[in-house]
Structures are given as C-alpha cells and as structure tokens.
Length: 398
Image (cartoon, rainbow, N blue to C red):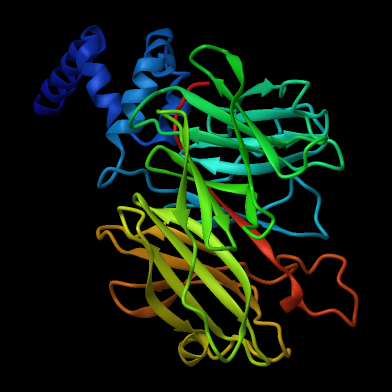
C-alpha cells in the first residue's frame, strides 16, 4: 500500500513539474551541459526550453565560478606532423569526446583561437568558422575582400566573446597594407549587427617593437597581443579603441630568451618565458598588474623538481631542448591563483600555486604521443612543440 501511494505521489509531482514551465526551467538550469543535449529528445517542450537562446545564456551564466568560466578540457595540437583537425584531449572535469568538426563538410579545419566556449577556426575555403562543438553548430564568415591576406602582408583574426557580459561576439581582423608595410588596419565584425565595420582603426607598428598579432588573448573585454619589444598593444572591444601596454621584462644575464607563452586566468594576464640553455628546465612566470602598469615576476619554476616527483620523466636529456612545451594557464578550482600546465615527455603536468607543488594532470597513455607521428629515428619527441586550446562545454548560441 505504501509503495502504491509513493508511486502516486511521485507521478503527481512529475505532472506538477511538467505543467509548470517556470519550475521545469529552474530544474534544467542546474543540470550539466551534456545531460541537456540528450534531454532535448525527451519531448517537444524540453526541446523548446533547452534550445531557447535566453535559456542557453542563463545556463552558461549559472555555471560560472568566481566570475569566470572553467574549461572542461584542453585540446592539444602539435606544430607539425598531424592533420589540422587532429587533436589530443586532456580532460579537466570529466572525460568528454569532443565532436570536432564532424558536422562541418570541410576537409581541413584549423583552430585559431578558443574563447569562453566558442572556437574561431580557419577553413581551407578561405573562410572562418565560429563553432560551438558542444551543440555541433557553426557559422561561416568571410573577411572583407580588401583585407584578406596575401603572401606578402601580415593578417590575423581574433575572437572576442564573454557570455557573462553579452550573448554577442565580435571578430577583430587586423591586416597590413601591402602598399605601406608596418601600417595596419583593423576591421570589426559584430554578430549582433551581422556586418563588418571596415578600417575603424589604422595604426603603425615600429619594426623594433615586434608584436605577435596572430595569437591574441581575450581578457577583461580586450584582445591583447604579445610583444617582444618595450611595448605591445591591446584592443578595447567595447570602446573600439587601441591602447598600449608595457612588455619589458627583467632579463637574465646567463641565458637568452627562447620562447614566450601568453595567456590569462580569471581576468589576469600571465606570461611564461623559457630560455636557451644547455640544460633548459627553467621557466619564469610573470603576472600583469591589474592597472596594466607593469609585468611583475611571480616565480621561477624548475622542472627538475617535477622530475623528483615523477622520476619517469626524461627531461634535460637533449641539449638546448627543454622537453616541455605548450605552457598554458587554467584557473584553480577554488582560489584565484592559476595553475601552470605544460606538456613534458608525453605527460601533462601542472604546477599548483596554492600548494606549491607539481602534479600530474593527465597521462596520454601508451601509443603515439603528441608530435611523435612521422618522426624519424634521428628525431626526438622533445623537439615537438604544441598549442593548447581550452574547451568549454556550453550551450552558447551562434
């Protein structure tokens, strides 16, 4: 009798929820993204709620942490030896098979940038794609004909998207005038308007102030570019203006700089610098002041300490080759301090600032490691470099 009563009560509760759309929406907002993708098949009512752009935006905002979104996984892509659309996945929360580009009918798709749940990709068709792999949706975008790059001029495209502030995204296209080297134009595309504003800014870059315009970092509503001189640039997306920021770093007397890794975590810019040394196991981490006044040295990390924790790592065995690469910054679970993540000898390790210790984040396992495909007998896995892209499971609409 009690069992029958319980069934009746559960049925009555289910009916109450089913007929109260506001209550159902509140419940669905609390479910993980993967579950919602599956639950679209439950009924037309559920499909309508979950597909609604306002619900998608509310769901993304409901699942932020400390005012920022947290990546679900890292996508690892080697510099060479692998097809453009081939990646390795490092899960950060739970393992998720990311449906890379299977829904796009282009043979070659290359990720240019990841930005808070959307991917900016380049297609062999001389077009760009704004993709949400979670929802298997994308939008194709063509740059204005006057700005599309030729082999003699510099050209780069960046994505600005912050769903915690707005459901709209913007594309920033920076291109060098082939008639006037070192003179650049900036075009801006708004998804809200659906059109381009051409050459809203023109500017010049001194040859001595080398600025890497390819790999912009979106942070605090601005696209930042890494410079190798005394200054660099950032574009304020909301106010549509270009500003300068310092790039001068303290120099080491015993070694030349080899490589810079530029990134952000929870609204703070970070820079990791490696050096050209016979045994190069060190990298310096710098943090940008919140008022953009200067870079502050944060810590010098030595991977020799990581080898003490993980003796299976074979680092420093090739002269002038560190054996680690792909440095990126991800937020910690609870604190403001970031984690520094890098690839080392086929394993993904990280330095946790809160605990002051090296940890193993993920093991790619046996078989082909990143970048080992097509390597000859005289080559070494440590020579490979790779790029990291953060993947966010989300329902953001295009």
